[in-house]
Length: 294
Image (cartoon, rainbow, N blue to C red; front, top):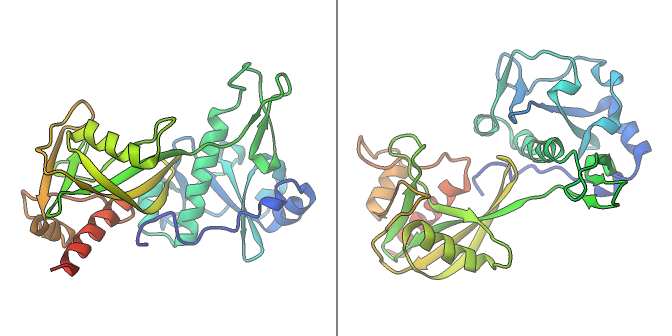
């Protein structure tokens, strides 16, 4: 797959989450990932990952950090920036970092972003409102008052390359840069299958009727906690009619998509999602499959 936050995943070593002695042994030589409240990573003057100064970890208790996993026998942990009194030259959003950083670092930061966001927004029990106590290396919040357990959550969303056999359906949101278009996407609702979500979301956003859909691939999308489930779908050639969610939706021909993928759209053609996204991969996959059929 040629999109971000997939390759280079850590060994999550789930068995170590209940072993504080093992985690403490990993701590002195750990890789520590620091993210601010907006999910940006600390970087040095070259826009590379910022490394805390030697000895900085000694002042911290590893129980404060989220244990992410292992790579090459080394432990990787995540902390919010305010936990460590250090200054970095700059900060970078993970979309920008993913386009330039090695896959291992980009993927680890995506994991860190998701779990730190969960921790920051789930400090209290959703049932009784009491403060949570965290264990299992940060992956479990327990309410001592009502005995409920709270775990990190991921929100599943479908993202769909919809075709009528000759054309590809793309939409755009009002806040996007001019000429930016993407495949349609939406969150799974309770009690739905993924295929039902595909049909519902495409119809709600564009008025186009889906006949069938097939799962292709997935991408963690830590902005802040989604899992994008990529589909291709066969649809009726209905004229798109948008509702409240999109500014516009339209069918694009194969030549238009090919030119956009090559960066040859000119001043009036579509601009596609960045290459780090599964959206771009789905568009490219649709175009490649159609060309093989010619």
